[in-house]
Image (cartoon, rainbow, N blue to C red; front, side):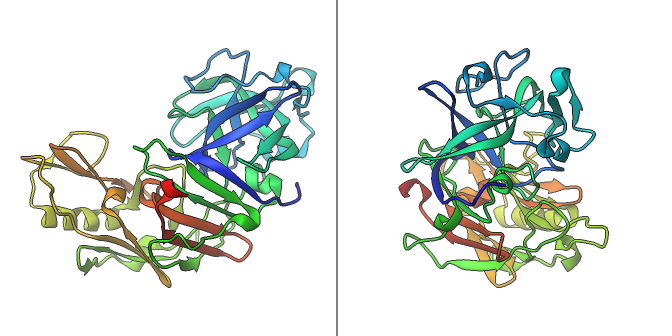
Length: 364
């Protein structure tokens, strides 16, 4: 584990992290990668590498480890390789650690698990050697205009675990914009005086898990707090259920009993024709004209904090339709990145605190 650093990084709003890896030559390899603080099990930071047998389209050149004097393939006996778990790696030629992983959205990657010197920072550069990551040469699925994935969850393979960072913050610009978001690591991770509303704090609830759980207690649509049973938001004795926050999931997902209440409230309020079998989004309405249509307020209620979402954080719309940017879930509530846009979000893992405040993220 590396000594904790303080670093400011630009982030793209998908959200993707601009990670710069400096190799042995004089040029740098810079690639945007999805930032995620939740997945279904332990998984490595990874990018696509040359020579690639099967790679996905990405905006940056492939990272070529043969041109780096600081890259090394890790042996199977390495602790990071062992942390992949027996089902996610095997020993290749020369005892190299070969990872193979399929993510929750069916995207998959296979390649050498290695280490490299990473350079972080948009102004004051920080170089950190021996950071473990997957160098994928066989990839399938989608990277959504990224070049890899960077983990910010609590498992030992994530970036923050490897760097020994216990506090980080991000501020995500709207995905339709062109300006990058910001990511802060270490003691810089805080909310400053540029907020558009109060700073609110609730608890990061810790379970034997790598996820970030938060104590959601209810939801308001319009002026009415919905009658959702408390059991919809709590973790049961088998560690199933609960509410987590994720920067790598787009739409908020609510368990069936909660989602049905939200959906019913929106249909009742909107009084517009509901579009059926229209898209991957469950609830969409037809508009008869481009005129502005009023929508109900939407508030997440946490213990000691209320997140009042701006319209753009839960409504997708154009001149002819509008959709609720949420979906039903089979067992776990996930607050996705669309709902986090234009909020400064702080994870204080050491002190079990989750803080947020409304901010114009593209002005930071």
